[in-house]
Length: 260
Image (cartoon, rainbow, N blue to C red; front, side, top):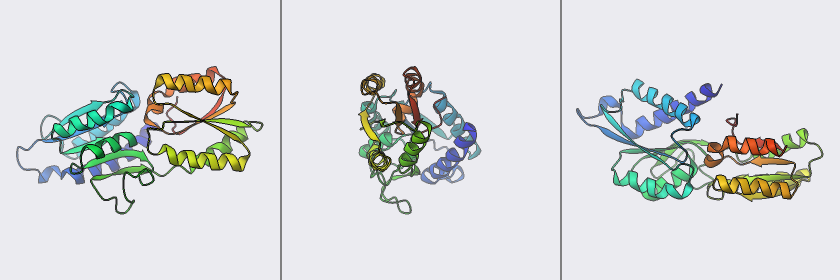
């Protein structure tokens, strides 16, 4: 199931990538196009590995072969948002022809680093609401790619939590303030909590240490359930979060299915 989800998303990214770079047949003979990868997570993350494998296979099917007619420059933030601007600037200095990014924060960093190099984002949450593009039909600027219009799911997720834990009166909401889409999720979650008569305890985390502290605060406030906002760092630390929730016997709902 996970591979089935990854493949269609990767296929769309590849089509947009190809449009940004130009088809292999149209490339001048001997030209080696340079592709920049900018990822918030780690190269060792199995989920990112699956994406890169599918992406590399798709590139080959389109006639792009690393080391022959394209060269790939990879930059990994290792879960640290604060590293993204410097990594994006480094890719721009490397004179890549296109930048592929895997997070909203990465897209924002790349956009701040260049207004001319094409940027292809992969499944970024609410790109319009985050201000990364002007609109879906006409994104404008140098950014295109996939966006997930999902902030309104926060309400449905809180409803599901209420069904699973009917007596729950307080839900902890974990967000990363550095993620441009988290503000929309916060608004939706707060509105849903009011409608359900549930107190929402909003907590913020940017790294593994802050995630630990956030769960400690949940325990002190006796939250019996938690809603995890979709975010690159939460995805890369999904096992840490799932283990903390299990250890504290807390019912939790996540913004992605990759928490196994």
